[in-house]
Length: 473
Image (cartoon, rainbow, N blue to C red):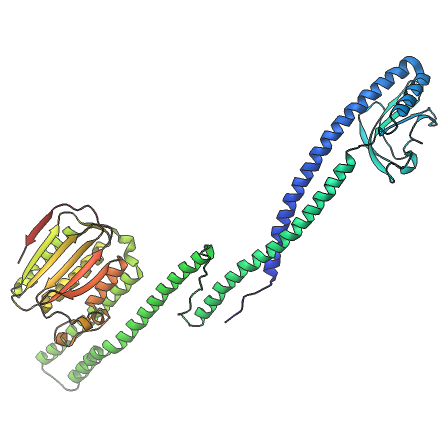
């Protein structure tokens, strides 16, 4: 018994695939959140910076830099912690006013353009507001005298936003780790169930056809698959058993007639004989050959019925019409023995099946009834509709079959002692059983007191109307 894999490259590969998908989804969600939040903040700040720069530019154009410097100083005095940064420089780059200590070295902001985000060195930012270089939105305006004014804004929401971002990143990291663990567990669970199926298949391949896939109490999709596979294995085992039985039966039951035929021909050739003796030997050989051919044809019909090869020929079968046709066909044989064949049918009993196979099965039953019913006896063929089923029953007044032998006579090549002296190969009831199984019907043997009654009980009953009795004989 093989043990399931607890860890495998397949499980790891599946786990990483699930985790990668999980990570991509979470990354897209987090990125969309940060982009949307940042976009809202940037839009508001851009509007404020552009509005203030426009007002300061108009002041400088009307009153010059002196008045502009006064306004900047008043703003810085009135709101020193507003987070707004100003820097007015002369044409040569020297600082004139503002709370920034120098022009940003890496800034490349086009004067008169839109707000741009630039890096500001911590050395030019007054106080200890950031403690490190800062990325700030900024805008620049250049005046007629060559001086330039830079406005920048510290983003007060960046702190809480960064904290939220850090928390979200930690959550995403934990979720990724959790997803990886869950993916590995899920992959191991799936592979463990697959290994169970694989191990069972391996045992079956070694020749142990009795092995079946275990079914758990979870009643999940794997259990449904295991159930279907077990049913398939049951059918395969049944077919293989049938093949073995047929092979064994052929080896035992056909060896004797073949040997007898060969011996007869050898004896005939041992010495010269007159033409009539040769004719008699050939006639007897032909009879033996025909018996063998009938046996092989019966075996072939049973094999085809058990394998379901006739399903392509299935359709709606009217059992009443079929019973009428078969009664007409076998009436002459019954009359030769002085037997009365009575037919009782329903007007319209319909099932789904193969008309040819059903005719062959019912014909075998009629042949047996005529063969084993004494001269002057009676045989009754009935089609009896029910609420959900329809029965075909055939009863006779022969010797019947002992109850202890009824299951045994359904096997191939089985013949009762009382039938040893009658023509036949012991395959008739085996064919009937195969056809019944193919049509999901029950084959029942009973006592008609005296005689035998055989019942074929079919599902899928069609419309039934009044009953008609048509005795023949």
